[in-house]
Image 1 (spheres, rainbow, N blue to C red):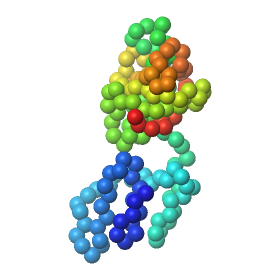
Image 2: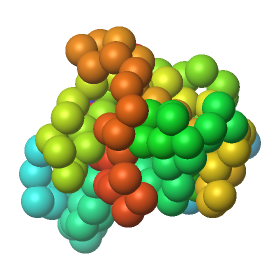
Image 3: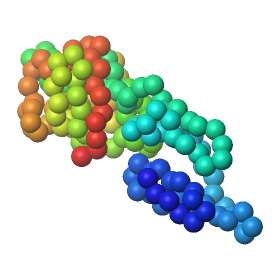
Image 4: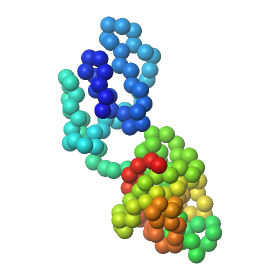
Length: 156
C-alpha cells in the first residue's frame, strides 16, 4: 500500500508505478481497463471520499480438467491440464511457458511449486498443462485428479 501527494492510496500487486495527476493540471494520457480493487487483508478497502469496495469472494484457482499426457497412461496424474484463463486472470497477462508458481491442491493439501506450460500436451481437455516441480514435491504419478482445485499462492 503506497501513498502519494493528496493522500491518494495506491495498491499494486507487482510494484508497478501508479501516477495520479493533480486535477488542476493536465493529466497523463492513460487508460485503465478492467480495474480490480482488492485488499486481501481487510473486508473492505476505504476510499478517501467515496464508497468502499469489497474484495472478490474467491481465490485464484486452477481447475483441473484432465490428467492424461502424451507420454501415456503411466504418467496419468503427474500432469494436469487446465484452461489458461485460470492463470491469465491471476497474472493479468498471458501465461508464458515454464513459469513457476507456489500452489496448494485443495483435495490433498499438497503445497509446492509447479511448472506450467501455455499449451496442451495430450490432455483430453484444457489448453495448458503443468506438474509439480521439485520444491518440496517432485514429479510423480497420481498427484492430480480431474476436478481438483489448485489454489495459486504466489509467483516464483
